[in-house]
Length: 204
Figure 1 (cartoon, rainbow, N blue to C red):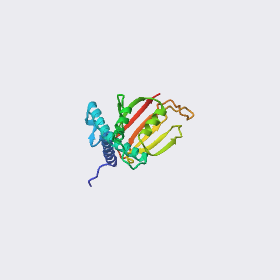
Figure 2 (figure 1 turned 60 degrees about the vertical axis):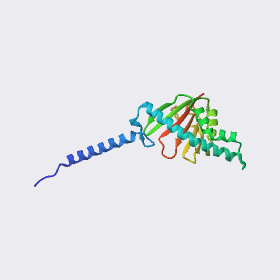
Figure 3 (figure 1 turned 90 degrees about the vertical axis):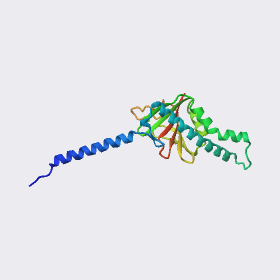
Figure 4 (figure 1 turned 30 degrees about the vertical axis):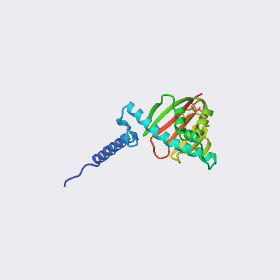
């Protein structure tokens, strides 16, 4: 009678197949896909240019969002003066330029690209910049770790903008208390699966 393969051999084959599948899955997960473009296939200069193009698209939408919120705030039916309208519809670009004056640092984590900027100021500056985005559904929060800040939605809920009193890199003591020595931060993160996070760190 012909015997089949030993159970130990079958188990080994199954184990190797599972390990190979997990490796393939991990390699796929590590790739950052931005607007259908595999960032792993780009040079550093090309990644930088791609993120700049993403910023242009983002600030265009931000112009319209801030302009619409500004008009709502006025509570007036009559048409605004042309010079005021021009300022309103360019407010998004002006705001982003004020945040992005420094040379950004680009980091990768999992399937996300983070573009970090650095700006002078403390938490009060971060709060002021936060409100300049004209966010909706603003909530103030205090975390269990002592973290404080504000969060709200912009661009009709497509993005979440958050101002934090300290960065999440603050140190935690042995008794669980947080040492509030991290930088204040302003973070803009997509709520629709976007892979680019924009973050401003304030140097007090």
